[in-house]
Image (cartoon, rainbow, N blue to C red; front, side, top):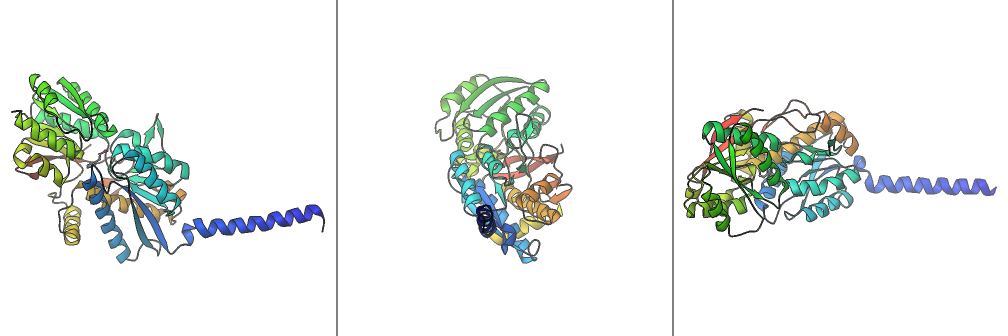
Length: 387
Ligand code: PHE
């Protein structure tokens, strides 16, 4: 045997072994089930968000698996806890992709956590669907659409406009104060979009203040805000801090309407703020369990039966993100990440609990929002706003 020939044979053997190895460990298409990851806030500052989302996803997978699964395979959900922190979110998605070999990831909830994870998804060519991150940068970076980034929720320019219009038209507000969570991309973005829309409506921003996550005492800043005498105060934060702010604001004798965004949606909000303090409080959200749409009532019933509680928006969005992924896998007729990604971009007229989803060129659904009014500790449906 010539030396050349021997080298060739050696290479061929090595190549065959390598192919076998790759197919053996990465071959999702060969496995009996389809593994889907969840990068979620299961503990930490916004734990109710991640837990509700996981419950929604699990319910969807249970129903789909009971009906025969997808492409003849069962779906397996693997949840990883990002502890409500951006750095942990990077760890969680890395583990899901490299160890668990998932074909796609659902989550995260908070925009900062999804932003932190999105580079890992891109580098590994694994698509993700954020269930509820509303900051525009989640799917678009410097004017460029991120190939592997998708979401099932509306975005903050819309949500901010909804609340600004509500302040101007329904509450007749002429002036507003804005109180921003400076540790959250979501809060900073939503504040900006609210301000822009409110000013466009002829309103005036009379105060702009900031806090940080885990802050406890907001009274000094609230006193400053009170002195500017705003018609409304917009607080685009998450329930832990918002709950304390609302409580302390009322203690200081601030009686004006307090407004917020989807980050208010937690059963903990009432626990922390108290029911009475939340009266005259309004926030935008993705759906209301009181909606009489048959898709909503069917979901609410199934969820109540499974978990014994009324599903919040996070649960509905988790459920919907799971449906969106399964729809893409079916249309792709494949569970390969690259093919799922291409099919996701083509999502059209998909009927889910929180609305009808068609993705635009920036991978964002164009969907309606609802305004919720807090009445004696209960969320009540105030109005539905179409884009
Ligand atoms: N929209 C929030 C964010 O981007 C997350 C959120 C969605 C929280 C829905 C509650 C309900 O960070």
